[in-house]
Image (cartoon, rainbow, N blue to C red; front, side):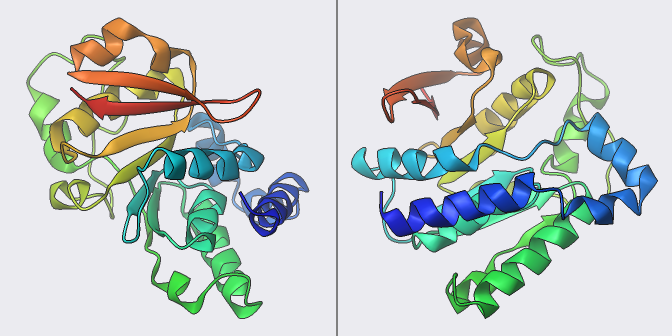
Length: 234
C-alpha cells in the first residue's frame, strides 16, 4: 500500500464526511427519503487500500481485473480502484448520489489525481438486480433467508444478466436484509471464478446462509485490526 493511495483515500473520506455534498440531497427531499430507506452512509474508505493490498497479495488482482460496485453511493471506492490501475464500474439507485459521484470523477481527472482513462468508468443509475431475477421469483416463494426481493419492479437502468459475467470482483456494502438477495444473484449469474467482497455485516459470517447458495467464505487478515471477507462459489 503506497502513501499516495492512503493520502488519496484519506482525502476522499474527508470529502464524504464533511457534509458539503449533502446540499444537493437537501434540495430533493423526496430523494432524502429514498436515501434513508436504502440505508446510504459513506463507506469506510480508509480500509479500501488495505483490502486492495490484501487481494493483490493473494493473487486475486491482476492487470485487466474488472470490479463492479453494487451501490456505489458517492463513488469513492470506484475512484480508488482506478487510482491503483484497475477498471471499475458501478450501480447506484439514487440519481442524486450518482450525479455527485460523476461530478467528483470529472474533477479528479481534471485535477490529474486520476488517469484520463477513468472517465470510461460506467456509473450507472439504476438497480443492480436484473429484471429477469425479479420475474424468476414473481410466482415463487422468496429465498429462504431473504425478506423478499428488494426491487420487484423494473426501473430505467439495471445490470443485465450478461454483465454479471463480465466482472471479476463484486464489491458491496450490504445491510442485513440485502445479503441473501446479493448472495443469490452472485451464485446464479457471476462467473465461477468471480469473488464477492465488501463491507462486512453479521450475515456474511453465517455458514448456513453461504451454503444455501453454494458459496464459501474465506476470511483473511488484511491488517492488524481488519479482516477481509471473500465470498466465492464452491
